[in-house]
Length: 280
Ligand SMILES: [Zn+2]
Ligand SMILES: [Zn+2]
Image (spheres, rainbow, N blue to C red):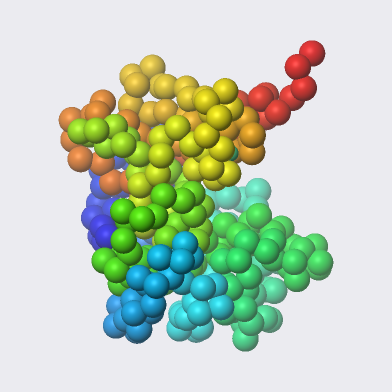
């Protein structure tokens, strides 16, 4: 697991080459810096490594959502900081973020329950019921949970037998990927977990969300320089950004690449929206 220090250095170095995206890159740089300041001790999560081999053999991610643990005060603090940082860079989201901050402060005793709900992908119903912006709450939780889940991945990773796990789900936390890479030598596909940054292998011809392997439903588009690809699935309407490492000479860090390619997300959403329109 690559440390925050290296990720931040690389992001800063590469951001200088993309002044057109300076504001977005500054937001993510600040969010990562806040995560890096949280101290999570790997030994606190050592016990879960014992159940890793059995869970993986049974086809289950190692971390059951209800087993997630974190220092509640540190997690609540990082949720709040994530809201403050995002509001600083995104004035358009300030009101929605203020509402989330107030609610999270009031509900701070339930922070682990919200984390488990987020990890179960259950849609954060309690927040939705009172009219909060749940995709934005998901964004906040994703960033606030990151240093804790990354530590789980760091501790559990060595006990995950990747030769028997070819699923769309992350073997550590059960999350979905949000970035992929094609290996320099073989072109084999590695997925990056959106929640815990764990990396695992998955078939290149199948959708990394719904696992559909019908070649007619799986398409990809390459950037002009062929470094980046966008894989889309017509069955589930989702996409994955991908870097083709055969096209680059230097080393790349996937958690940095996911941020540098944020402009690709906009293009991807347009492609997927167009694909879901009925043919006229
Ligand atoms: Zn994960
Ligand atoms: Zn799919």
